[in-house]
Length: 211
Image 1 (tube, rainbow, N blue to C red):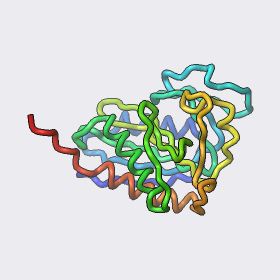
Image 2 (cartoon, one colour):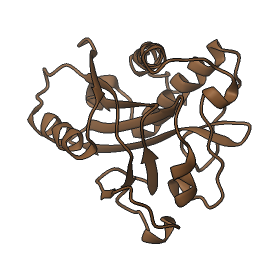
Image 3 (tube, helix red, strand yellow):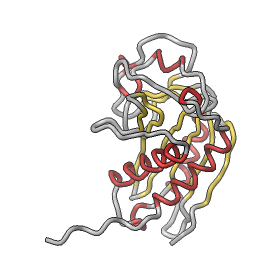
């Protein structure tokens, strides 16, 4: 099994980072180690492939970037840990739906370490606390390899979420760790999330039940 290479990129602009993910995924071979990129972005809205423009419900000065992941519109900004997973699923032995579940579990585990109960929501990928979204997920798979990933709200200005229907859901509440009473720094949250993601991504796939 190849080791997961963790890269901490700091605060970086969205579009060059997206293009770098595309380039990495296009050039990787069967021997290329998987990577996890940890970073944050300046304020930006990203609109997934199936995104509908009506989910941007108010005009703002924040740019909107149409991209190639699944899902609708979401917001990235300072104080949010963004984790991009560049993983060869062919080596892992499971598919995209299970990867999403494992990514969600990583965030649930991080919050549980701090005494916060989080959960999934059927039909709405992500992680929620008391009905409010604290982590959003979106992926692209090409030739069995993933890019994009998840965004975990740590200590951020949540006001820009009011200008969108987050992930396409009107009126969806959004929260972050600070509002839940957790005094986590961006660096500490990123490190804890990285360990949880590595554990989940590289756990053996569940055995199929006997027929």
